[in-house]
Image (cartoon, rainbow, N blue to C red; front, side, top):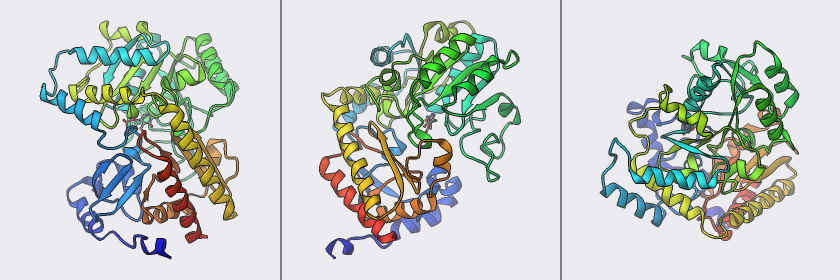
Length: 431
Ligand code: PLP
């Protein structure tokens, strides 16, 4: 058919570059996870709106969006304008600027309960400073995190995210890991309030903080069980533990005020990154003044690039674009349509799958009907999905391994329909 003729057979320019890149870049990529792309990582030339163009001249509808940050698409004119104007005033003053204070107010306005902001550059740094603040506030040492949750690549948190080859979950997430940091982590099962109650009730538990992704985006975009976040809040209150919501993905995405607004539960600290600045490196810890103001009394918060003008300008533009009327309703409608279309595409082929979304974050869990747990996600048919991702790429749809899809303000209904058609064709190719 005419459509089949347009299917991409190979990516000769990308392939050539990919063969040589490891001679320069360690691992051939700048972040290890990007090496997972099949058949090999593509070299992209440019992006505009919801589209990317690769070095072979192919264009794609982009559902990777820089692994989440590019919530206003690529090269949004307002973002470019604000960032360019900021850059023309200088890169970074190494002191303080009105820009940092003003964007801080904008962020605090959106996140219920936020009394202070600390700027950092990445989600991993935000998690690290939040843990330090929690330890200083409580005088305790340990951190509770949940299986399948991700809080960045530092030793303090890189455990309990993905199972080790032997199936266990609590081991080091990397070679070269400091065993001492794992010793400070207690891993708890997500959604089991009684298990957490038992951990915190132990008088020797020494827990400073409980960290969680309030919607477990990294492992299935799983909505928390009813009432679970509130139980977390109550348990942390009862035991004097700092509750941290890692909203690096959910922040400004699943609602204007993220999960805090959507679920009506206030943690002590919130981590923000990704969508906050539309693709520029900006992150933040926001929350209680009493905890964050410890940076004036002995807690070190440092970073040469913290609050730099260009990243802050990216934040100003992005949050302003997200405030346009109807943005979140549109996310809901478009991602809902994609969810329905994918569900029908799998069903029509007689394949089991769970497909759901929270705002513009969509998840496909292949091979499992009604998957609602971390274990169901781990046990899904990822070999099939890896093949599916390649078939989608051949049909000009770029999406992540692992089943998560992101939509931006720039995606359209027509593009969603094109994508559903590509999904049907990709599934048919594999069936
Ligand atoms: N927390 C969550 C929930 C994330 O998804 C990520 C990154 O994907 C991080 C923290 C780490 O953020 P960064 O990659 O900016 O260090």
